[in-house]
Image (cartoon, rainbow, N blue to C red; front, side):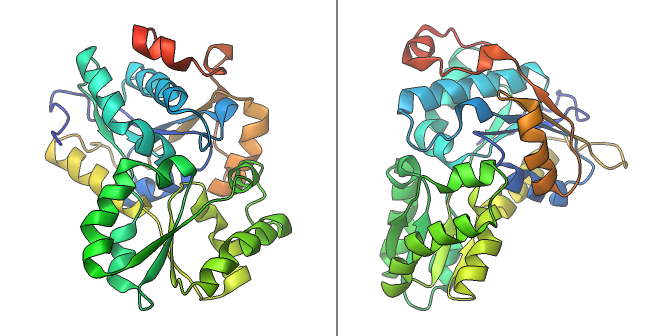
Length: 297
């Protein structure tokens, strides 16, 4: 992957996009690695969850978000949504490049299978993700490259109730624990000792997973690796923020700001300004808009 042009503004924000608030788990890692950087976060809460949407919708929604972030002057954009990456990462990069929007580096996510394969003792690991991620080529490539040569069995897991629980601020609730118990107990019984959190909402379920299963699972997610990649790209391009002050976070949602703000405050541990993007972002634009190149911020 090529680095962003050095001529861009080093003081510009990093953009982060997710279908909802789950990408805040990635933002947290980016801030830990790059505490002076400003971050602009796009939460497509009106269209969340993405996990069972048609691929054309996911691609269209992703393009809408990326073009909006680019229009705000972001120097780099992180797609902090495993589903969006699995479904459309290559496609949206190609579309943006073809239409003259390819001057901003796009960093995507891949489920953290490699470290799980390296450390599993039972040789059975679980990728806990959405159907789009589980069935996508990105995960298949990682399995072929790392798990299959090591003789590690990869089991899939998904439950549609979990992302809405995180979006509602109920990640540590008794209901979340009940759903996790139903979903993951058969995988314990199948011998799994490692759980790859292949959706950015799922790191917020870690306390409930540990409360329910203790240390039966080693947990892995991609947040720290993404933060390391972002730091490397910005450093290599001379785009690290030149200031010494703590970076700021601004969050925009396609949903209702008053509904999203309390959940953001809970997950971030502090108040964060949340603003609504307005009605134009609240409907899936569909495949026709993608094909016609009509998606604009």
